[in-house]
Image 1 (tube, rainbow, N blue to C red):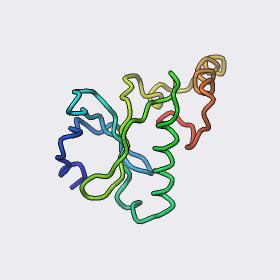
Image 2: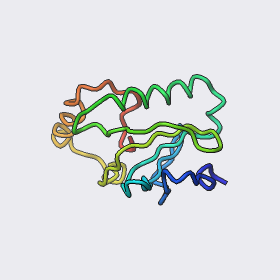
Image 3: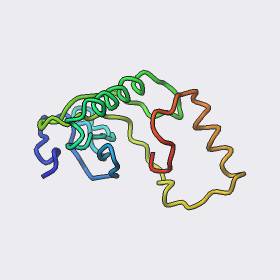
Image 4: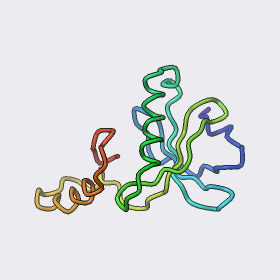
Amino acid sequence: MHCWDKFSNGTYRIQRLLGEGGMGAVYEATQVRLNKRVAVKVMARELTANPEALARFRREAEVTSGLGHPHIVQVFDFGATPTGEPFLAMEYLDGEDLEHRGPIEPRGCIPHWRCIFGGNAKQSQPLRPAN
C-alpha cells in the first residue's frame, strides 16, 4: 500500500501517478480547499531513514519555494504524509514529457536552454528530460 492510500486529511486529493524516480514519486492532485490542480512530490519511503536524503529534500523545498520566475515551478507547501514520508506541493504544469519527444537537434536546443538558464537558478538536481 502506498502512503497516499491512507492520506485523507482533506488537503490534497490524489488523482494519478505522473512519474517515479530515485527520490520518490510525483502525483497529479487537487488542493481540496481551492479546487486547484497541483503536483505533489513524495519522497520514497525507503529514503526517509537517510538523514542526508531528508536534508536534501527539505533544502529542495526551501530553495524552490523562495524562487519566483516564469520558468521555475512554484512550490507552495511542504509537509509529511500520515505515514511519515515528506512531500512538497507545487504548481501543476501541463505539457509534454520531453523524454517522449526524442532527440532535439543542437539548434533546436538554444531556445530551451535560454528558458531554463534564464531563470538564474542554481540547478539542484541533474538536468534531464524527466525533471
